[in-house]
Length: 250
Ligand code: APR
Image 1 (cartoon, rainbow, N blue to C red):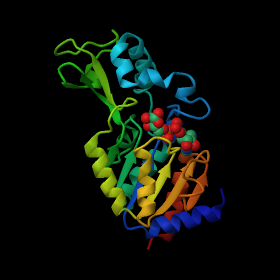
Image 2: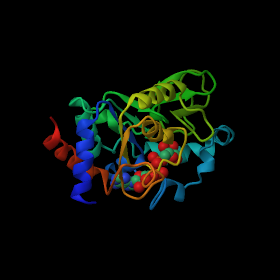
Image 3: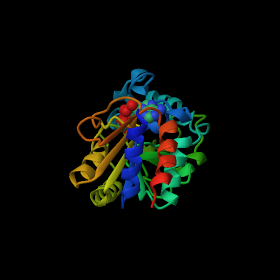
Image 4: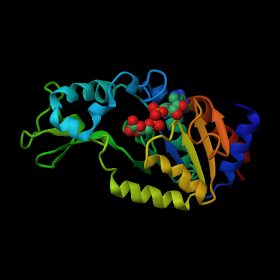
């Protein structure tokens, strides 16, 4: 990735009046959380069909141990990395309006980001599919699987979006409305393959906005949508972009 590309991206970010970040699994890889696709991806080791909502409801005994292994065992250990902190810094300096994330790991909030739209929900809560009650994840023991609902003994489901499950409508509406007002989208660590979340950068682009992409590999955005494509690790490139930005900020 050329210094020229970084410099031009920083200049575009400095000029932006309402920038948002759109993030995916790639921003958390340097926190020790594997991506879903690409080398070492979760879906190369586990069958995504098992995380389809109706399959889960029919086979909770089979799916819950996988959920614990993939999403909950590493949760307590994963910490925000330099990329998460860089976005929180941008927001604190008034240069980022919000993070729209597909991630469910809560690392943006842990790094200090305050306006975070979680398109696919989060691991922070669980919901009972029988009595519909919500529970904070730390209050639920995973020693016994599936964990029974503390209130009615029913089936608990993590409060993140399973395949063929609806996106949280309020998040979808608010994030879409913000994207329509944004004049820059900073894509970090996502292949943009999953909709409707993946539409966010296109909405900004179609509204005349600028797209900066930080990605380890080329994505669906790279050569048709991104105005600046910075190839590399988010934990390295985002702090460099912020550093360069400080040189151009009026
Ligand atoms: N720095 C920057 N980008 C990285 C890094 C890194 N260190 N490591 C990987 N990437 C990029 C890859 O280039 C790829 O574009 O992260 C992306 C990982 O792709 P996916 O695993 O498909 O992640 P994501 O796009 O967020 O998946 C979207 O798919 O399974 C569903 O709900 C799940 O939210 C997820 C959605």
